Length: 291
Ligand SMILES: NC(=O)c1ccc[n+]([C@@H]2O[C@H](COP(=O)([O-])OP(=O)(O)OC[C@H]3O[C@@H](n4cnc5c(N)ncnc54)[C@H](OP(=O)(O)O)[C@@H]3O)[C@@H](O)[C@H]2O)c1
Image: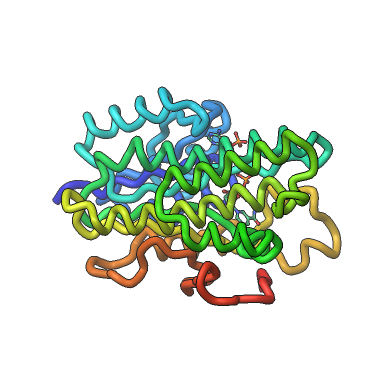
């Protein structure tokens, strides 16, 4: 039986590292699980951490802001294994809020939205039948959705092409460049908009892959891992940390989506939190809480 091949982006720390841990345990010697990182030292250190736990991840450099880096990983995996069974688009950033909103918009959308889009486009040709693609979004996407104008909400509900979602992201960047994006119905929160973009993208990608007759039983979904203690949330201290969960706990829902059994037709293009589909583009799921 061929090895199950899994790739997790940005997995030298946080939820990504925990997902590699969980996938290594799940597949044991029947899997090739790629821990990837943009920084070799941090990546190899993370590999050592898992090796000390008796696990055996493989390492590859990967910067999701660099298409050449994505293509190198895809080509190396194609040569070694022929294809990929699981792709987890985990790499993400939360911009420092002391930089101008326009810069936050550009960098957030580049890594959190285009990183996911380009990784999926680069890898889809080698995703095998039965493949699972999981994007890390956030419940912040739902909160953001409820705080943009009704007109923009409608456009997110109706968007049916990748170009349409990317166009919405471009519009937010443009509105941030011109001044205060709230005057155009947006929220002044670049991370939230980028994750809303991921949720919209997932919906469209799920529809497209279902119609693609060259792909059998490939599912593309996104999720919120919960509110996690990680480098991303490290600025939260004291009282704020009380409700937070560990990265291993946060890995539960994305791993659930990565391992959805064959023939799971009803979880396609969805946003999932705590193993439950949350259709916030269709249903009102307010109040949006991480509890
Ligand atoms: N933490 C939460 O409460 C929470 C809640 C909802 C959703 N999420 C989402 O879950 C995912 C993981 O979050 P986390 O808390 O584990 O964050 P984290 O600890 O900050 O880890 C983020 C990972 O992404 C990597 N990364 C950033 N830019 C990259 C790039 N251009 N190329 C490759 N890797 C890159 C980072 O690498 P470096 O170490 O080199 O920086 C790091 O490995 C993110 O997408 C985040 O938005 C997190």
